[in-house]
Length: 212
Image (cartoon, rainbow, N blue to C red):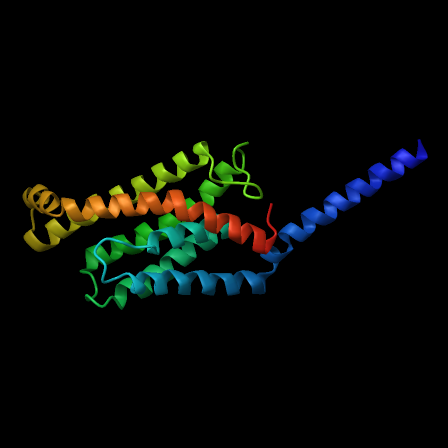
């Protein structure tokens, strides 16, 4: 009986030690600050790297990933900082003020949403980043999330653009229909990115940081 109790206590200590080691990195303020800078820089660099390819981008995915790894608050901060830098210093020129304000809000919310999604998936049995995230339930959730984020952005940004340029909502549908090939590419590209790239990056970062 004593041997068994000692074995159980050893198991408890081992599990607690493992749990501590899996969270210690993200609990360090200095490390979190460093990650804030790294994720912000990665989002901006990837944004500029693909800026001349129409409607193909990893900017959205990177901000969502940042929120997924670091939580709602830090994800929102990364979304705000990276979108301000990327939009303000965009090679095509800074957006009109109403669109600029919306873009800041949009990407801030994406970072926040990443944190919410992590909490949501963490309660699902199918979410096993230490094993495999390429399972149908997880991929469906990521696909729907990526598609909705992209569709919402394209519709609202087109709506704001129509109001800013023409001062009326009557021009919304003609502008949206003309740009439909580009918005379709944007929608498909981001959806595929959330299906094929996002799970891989989550698994990689979880492994590097030893998160469970």
